[in-house]
Length: 120
Length: 106
Image: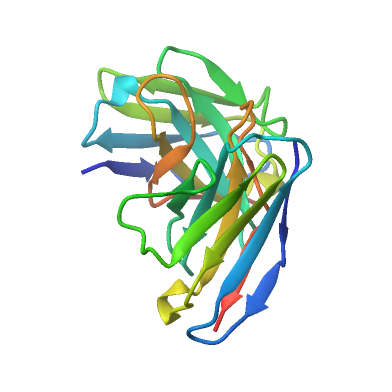
């Protein structure tokens, strides 16, 4: 079955960096677009970034230029490098998989999330 | 494209028919998904392509609409349906935009 396990969350000071990882299993990782979606405490869902199966990356306006999504298909792992962190980046960060093989469509599977807290 | 849900919250009785609306600021064809997030849990895909039920989702859930107006209906509300429901457009993505959510209580 599809499993997505995030790691790397924690407490970090404003302006610092953090890298999240997502270990994927149970499917052909290299064939699917992968996402990061976040949820601030008590708030709704916000799409953050996508890594397409064929190497493209796109970002939400709120994180473009500060966050970088990448993937290691040989190790079935998705990453989110977060630089210049701000208090408003505090959230539970979900790793998620696209429903389709190949071109992206919509999010089907979600990990349990990694909590990132940005505070001095 | 902005996605607006209504109402923001609702309270209904077990067995009631519940309807949640989602409006897109521009036409998105039928490229709309609905997610259910139970308290403290991970979001779960309920419906995609506006009206296609995800495998394993109870048949009391249904979706309808196209263009700019969409509806999620629970025909007979059950205690386990207490959750926040989100619509999301995937037309002309990126970005993948979520509605603000509708909290359903008993």
